[in-house]
Image (cartoon, rainbow over all chains, first blue to last red; front, side, top):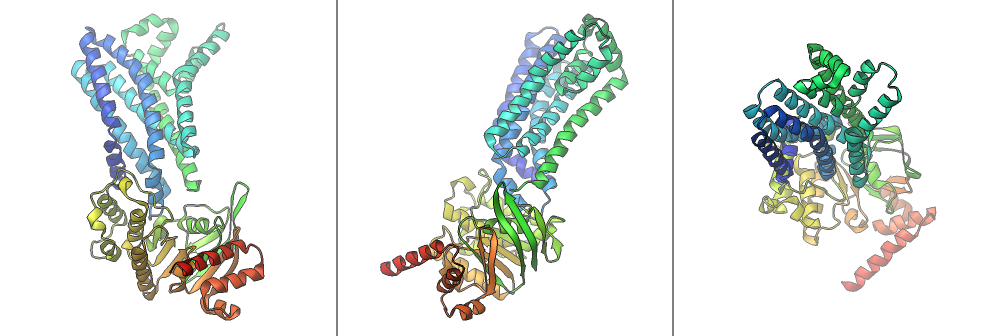
Length: 255
Length: 256
């Protein structure tokens, strides 16, 4: 499998977008840490980038890459290789390139300036979100044969997870504000990897003290080992289920 | 070597393959002919597992096509339109294919690579190649691993006369090695010197699968195009296509 991923990686490095992405992340993180005196403030600003930009780039880049490597996939299909293996190698190649961009661009500055609990939580969340959204993008692009539709669908998913979902949660919380909703919101957070990541990092920071009773409950849950386990498992599910669905429909597809 | 059992395939409302059964053996050169959109490429892609039939089974060397993909190591496939990764250089493409197949340098068949002078373009990226050069690369790749089955989809389309001749020579050479060769082509005169069997498809249905001698005997024609024309007149389904070929041939005669 790695044999194929190598060529996928090589192809990705050729078009230089990943290098530009790495540089962008690096410059932004570096300047954040230099501008803010308090490193936890810088982490907070970085958090927004990780939560908004990372999923967007992962989705768009993966979808475009998939459609661009359609020829490569076609060529591989006539070779003695299984479809699962072909798709997994594509996934591996894209993941490795996006993750190395993240680790170099954000990981290095974070380790230099703020190598504490919060910093590691940020890196964990960024890594998880990259994998999750790459996997979701694979599902979107395998399902739709048309390039424009695939990218449109990926963008729509991003809007949903990054913006619309929060609005929906607020709406629900307002509508049922008379009831105890703490446990329920915990469940809601699991349904959106971006939200889950946000809560996971926020609770590592001091600001969680400002969030009242819900914050206390969250802090109690996410601050413990149970919370870390919960986040990891949910993120893993978010990464594997879309990928599994993508493989399933890729195996049945006519090329 | 290839056994096709009652396969059906529908694309939306179009019946691309309609209950096709056939048996191909080694030493045969099967010409798949039929009008555009008659299901030739779909049939080939089904054998390669790129298109999944709605029903029916295909076996290659008694291995079911939808199981272990290892059976494809016995197949060399030359697509109608060779599409390759744009950024990859020709040399890298060949190197990658060898790695994927775990082939030894000694076992590979470099005849076509050398005759088409492909090492001269090893440093060129695939996207800069012309259609004909791409076809040469596709052909060289199909023959590279000395496969027992060769599937060639419109192999001579887009090739210049010299390269086309080289490819035909190579096909005849492989035929002598007792391989199974499947060819689709609209240029019947190209097929004439190669083929042993004719399979005629129309609107997804198999009209006939006959060996050349039987066809010649039944129709009393020696020339392949005329023999097929005569058979098709009997079917009287769509004579237009054959007539067009006749017109084209007559035009050729006038020029030369």
